Length: 402
Ligand code: NIG
Ligand code: FE
Image (cartoon, rainbow, N blue to C red; front, side):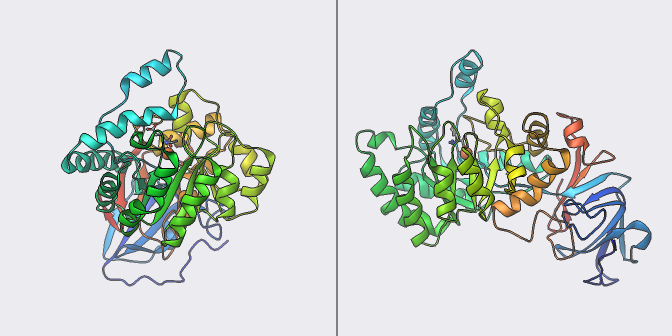
């Protein structure tokens, strides 16, 4: 196949050529080896402004003013972490310790973080977001989604979204994380708040609306009411679905054309079929199963059925306190039946699909130039060498940031 996609001819000026790339993952199957990863060996890449304008074999690279030698490293698209909860304060070390001594994970632990988050200043929340997004960036994440959900009052939810929106366009309103402790005896009243005054305050700051559809959080009818109200305000749905038990979350996500059903740990055959026959991505969050010692989601079953699978961190202080996409890739390969190629695709192109984005998660002409350089001869090393800091350089929108 022609690996020198010249559809957008690079200008000789102001372009940067990155050459001597051992393996370039483009996620464009029309390039390179023709696999879903569109892998080009001995590759080069040309960037102009914030965009990729050319990818192909080093020997065919055009002349440019600026030249960067990748030194035989591997380049993959920057990771797209389509599910995180970074606006919080405090941590839950004691709860983690108790779990590792045999206690089960329960949604109720969220209340501990709600109390700490309400008590925090804006500056403390912001510092936390910056800390974890920098941590993620150092590990190759160039796009992240993040949610509210630890405020659960009109003011605290809106504040969380304002803080998040200063750092990402992918902001999700999760007022329906659990029923606020202030409404413990009146869940219907809390749903009315989430779909009324709280939605009014939050909608201007968010792109997405999410619900934790689970026993101990919100049932299918409550979740439908909340997501439908959000849709009417121009927010697009995504759902925390089927994490701790079988339930209606996945079917509801598909019914409402949610961009993503997240967790997908407990799925019936009907749930798998529904995902496979829809545009709803199954986002798997292996950090959560790792940190709660729960059963692994079956990525193999979803992929074999034809569903689109994304991998994300779910970074939060309760169920999954990791910001590392490489760690999630390694877990998905070791324990969820994915091949290294599939896991790398899901952590990049899959995440982009879960955010309904086509400008990220790939490295072919027209894409945003978000690159993670791996000090490794192949992307397979992300799974083969777990826990090793292989990401040695990161570019975002055409410029080095790490
Ligand atoms: O995605 N499932 C619900 N929410 C988070 C956990 C939040 C917490 O425990 O603080 C999750 O796993
Ligand atoms: Fe989550």
